[in-house]
Length: 323
Image (cartoon, rainbow, N blue to C red; front, side):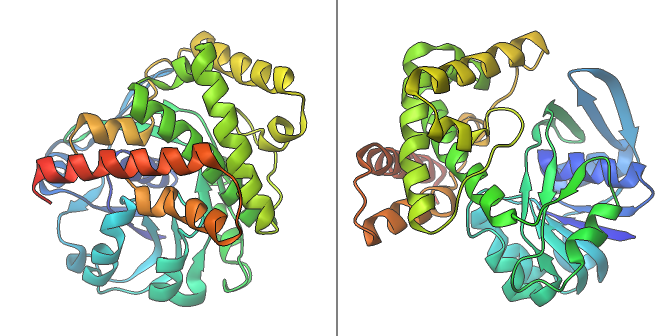
């Protein structure tokens, strides 16, 4: 299988390494410095629980140079996707994205039509330097055929990496579930600069996290989507349906599990962006929920406040970067 990974930073590099190891012919489309390092030295993948490995992949900074693909994986930030998809001149038999946001499949459907499947990534990673990516958080990648996806697309994608990809027939519930936690976690880490496990182990932050989950869950249910329980902190159905004290305990135990398994360097993507002076995915992650809540007249004051604060942080980052 010929695989093109568009916007290959940390996550794209991790998926590229896995797919290459599974026998796929992989090309990363990424920043020039990263592409040069991968071509010269290979991609070094580090993990919190395993020795480093080196993976020989193709890499280029030019999306127009890679041609047609059996599988296109979009791993760029949401604000870079439109440009990347326009610059990529090839076709794709299969496609998915690992971006956050409830509407993340829409650009792929516009570009690749029924070849695009909704997907949710629970993988965490950091690009340490050009040519070196760190795998920091264990999680599955969920795929499913949406109403505009050609039947069987998600199954075919999953067959390339069955030990890491899982097909779900409720993919939009999974997508909303991830979005609910993304809004909560990104808000808290962006405003407090906390690494992931501290969000769950600090009582005050845990309280705010749960309140944001509850309000975002109201938005999902107003759209006719029922959140589900997934491994880790994404037991959103349980968190929404349990007494508050029990839900807070679920979150606390998850933080303790992160520490006990050595996952103490996990940084939510929003924090990585802030540290590097890069824009945030406000339009993809926050605005869709806030706008839907406003349309339906929902009282979600914390979600509204978090969205406005994230817009403010994003504007400051963009101003500093001259964007």
